[in-house]
Image 1: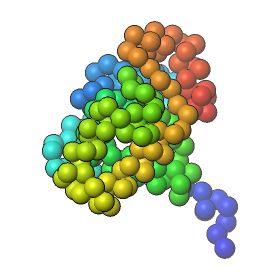
Image 2: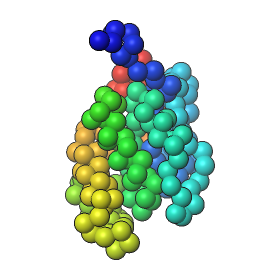
Image 3: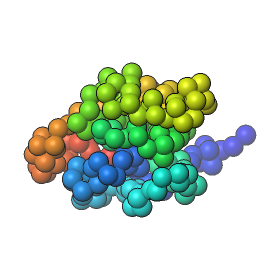
Image 4: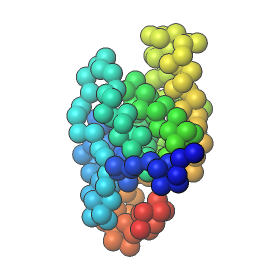
Length: 182
């Protein structure tokens, strides 16, 4: 039988950020990352733009596994990226199997658009189903992950509100407290 100290997982990161870079890298995500960094939160943010057809890297999968919390920033075009969907599926798998805390942020999208694909999420899933097959393992896995993450309690933002919220030190502390990081 393993001792309690050896059964604890080593966590390299406090937070793993999942996002679609083309949507939010230079606005919302920059504010969020800066707020986490100023709060002393060790945050993993993938800095590379993905090319079409690229597979999610082993290093990225390991970063998810080695994080305490995943913040998934759902934006209008998040579901267009198979990379983001693979990342989300891994995050939800780690939530079930490794006690990863998952915190969704709905940036300019409604939770119901993610949970039961509507609008841009419905269009994205239709494209993926055309490519991979409606009953493919990929499509099933992605839909399950979207439903699971979209059903979690999280934050809903519009751009103007984000700047106001993240500009305030008190709001940063409140946000980090929500994540149980302070």
